[in-house]
Structures are given as structure tokens and as C-alpha cells.
Image (cartoon, rainbow, N blue to C red; front, top):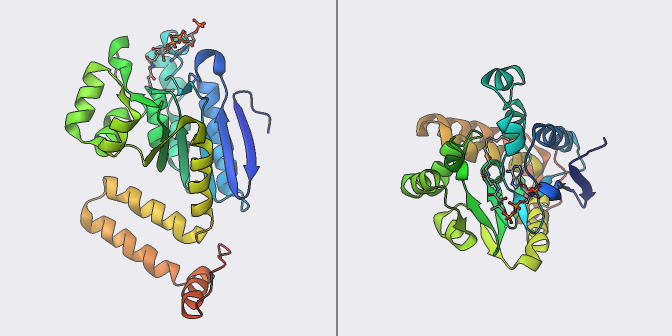
Length: 257
Ligand code: CO8
């Protein structure tokens, strides 16, 4: 697959995707999001890949939706192009996604980082939803995912003032998993990806789904989903391998079966 806006690499069971529109700080136009959804879906189907790592540049993870493209769009364009359909495809990716964020993660950039399951931030990262300054509001899940991640008070302030928060503030608020020095971002994110890639893939997949259910299902339904996933895992070879390896005091070798 030829990508125009992405640099894609596969390394040790990790699918690495780098956003690559440097001239406009990785502004997310529709073509880029379409490519991203295509590549992520391909990686989701690829048995050689267990974790997806999404990165931007040092200056910007992504500075938001492409304002030039937005400025030229009408409500009818949004409807006819199904503007958010590719975001939905990204939301449905089953393998864990780690976002490594350096510099600006603003507007759609912050929303894209929040589509990931884990965020590793460099000390230079800035997370914000500045759409209010453009006369609009977040459209790719910002009001919902940010509120779930950091709570009403902070989300409301970020969305109503448009002011970004620092990486440290994001860590304190629970938006990111860890903050690392800028020059160690890729290394640290890769180490986390490799750690998860060594875990049993079917359990990882069901664990991701179960945690995500906690965000939108009532407790009883979420517990039901978790229990069914738990039962299902007892039909996997990895469950037998994991428990047998524990009993035999050896390292398990998970095959994703
Ligand atoms: N869209 C288009 N072009 C952009 C964007 C953007 N979001 N951000 C930066 N650029 C361009 C600039 O226009 C500039 O281009 P040029 O060199 O041709 O003038 C180039 O990138 C470099 O930017 P700056 O010169 O502005 O760089 P600075 O270091 O001075 O400033 C900032 C960096 C603070 C990040 C600044 O560029 C900025 O404020 N950018 C816009 C941030 C923003 O408002 N983002 C929200 C956009 S709206 C949105 O995301 C809605 C989400 C809806 C759903 C998602 C659908 C995809």
C-alpha cells in the first residue's frame, strides 16, 4: 500500500505508523485519516503484528484537523463524505494502540491520541481542544473522551478556554500513562509496545474490549461482557500455556491461539 501522509514500518510484532505532513504540523485532512484507517485495519488483520504504535513528529503529534479543509466544508459535504466514518474505523481497531505524543496534540490531534489505548507523552507534549477559538467545538470525540479521561472540571475548562495543558498536567489528570524525556519518547513507547506484544494476543484483545466497555456500559452489562470474555479465554491454547508455564515455573510462549 502506498501512503502519502504516513510512514509505516513493521518491527518485532509492532506496527509503527508515523504521521507525516510536517509542513502543516501533521494537520489531519480527510485523506490522512482515510490512509490511517486503512493501515490500521491492515495491521489489525496481520498475524505478525500485535501492537500498533502511532507517532507524530518532535514538534507536533498533530495540530488538529486541517483548518484549510474545514473552512471549505459545508454541512452537506460532511454528510455526503461521511466525514467521521474513518474515525469510526479507527475506533473499532481491536489490537492495542499506543500513541507516542511529542509537541502539539491539539483539536483532532488530541482526539486522535485519545483514540489510542495508552499514551506515552514527551515532556514537550501539549494537549488541548482549541476548537472554541475557531467558533466550533470538538467533533471527533473530544467532549466525550476528554471528559471521561480527566473529569468534568478539567475537560470543561480545556474545552471552554481552548488552553492546552502540559504533559505533566496530563499525567496528573490521568490522560496519559507516562511522561518521558523528549529524546527517549520512541524508545519508551516501543518498550511498552514490546511488553504488551509478549502477552497472549487473544486475552489482550478481550481485555482491551472489556476496559472500553467500562466507558459506555452500565456496570451490570460491563461485568457480563467481562465474564463471557473470561469464559471464552478458557478455550484458548494460550490459557493452557500460561497456566501450565506457571505450574512448571517457566516463561510462557504465547501463540495467539
Ligand atoms: N490546519 C491546517 N494548517 C495548520 C494547522 C491546522 N490545524 N496547524 C498548523 N498549520 C499550519 C500553519 O498554517 C502553518 O502553515 P504555513 O507555514 O503555510 O503558514 C504551519 O502549519 C506551521 O504552523 P505555525 O506557523 O502556526 O506554527 P507555530 O509554531 O507558530 O504555531 C500552533 C503552532 C500553535 C500549533 C498553531 O499552528 C496553531 O494554533 N494551529 C492550529 C491549532 C488548532 O486550532 N487546532 C484545532 C483545529 S480544529 C479541529 O481539530 C477540529 C476537530 C474536528 C474533528 C477532526 C476531524 C479531522
